[in-house]
Length: 203
Ligand code: A4P
Ligand code: MG
Image 1 (cartoon, helix red, strand yellow):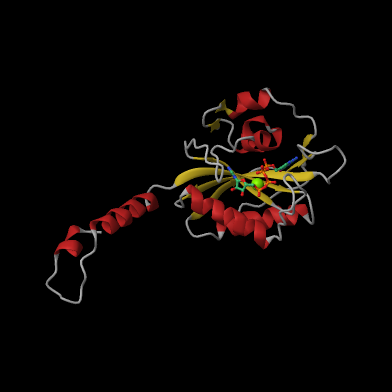
Image 2: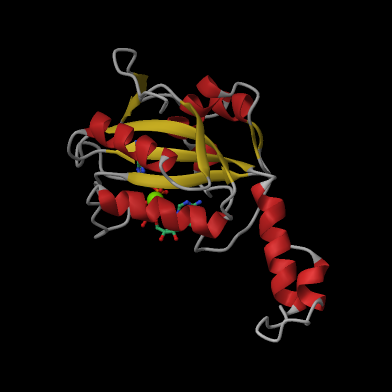
């Protein structure tokens, strides 16, 4: 947006644009030219897990302001945080994005994608058709409970670290260091690569 828009009042039908709006538009414009890297974790343990994960990848790619840059291998994983045997196993994968959306809008979109796959929230860590978590957004570190960045449990979960390491061996988790080193420090028990399955990167 140029200053002349705000200063040229010769046409009486044109209202002056407040400076604060000009600043907002200019900031949005900078973001558009400066996409950020984001890492999302996908998990499913109800329904057709592979189809759902692929649907989530496609829905993310269909989001204005989001490009899916890489999709990890699929892992079959024992449910974390619940009684053993009380839930079906998960399929987990990690997606690398470039996005011009701010973190809050990316979370809104993640929730919309979950809802499109009939996610029902009844209990914490309950079985679900789809969970879409933001693992990391650029270098942002924020303890806001609505959107904690990086994801507060990502650093201790092999079902996040292993697929992330597969697609980006040099990755760093902000505030925690190299994903490769974190992966060495957690158990991989119950986290198995499903080499017979594959998610497609959208065209
Ligand atoms: N929230 C805060 N930070 C974030 C973030 N970085 N990404 C808030 C996404 N959401 C974030 O999430 C609850 C609230 O967390 C959201 O409203 C959001 O504002 P939810 O998806 O409604 O509920 P949840 O997923 O049951 O809770 P929570 O605490 O996010 O669970 P986790 O830690 O995501 O764990 N075992 C295996 N093997 N594989 C899994 O994928 N996933 C979970 C869920 C448990 N066990 C698992 C797996
Ligand atoms: Mg979640």
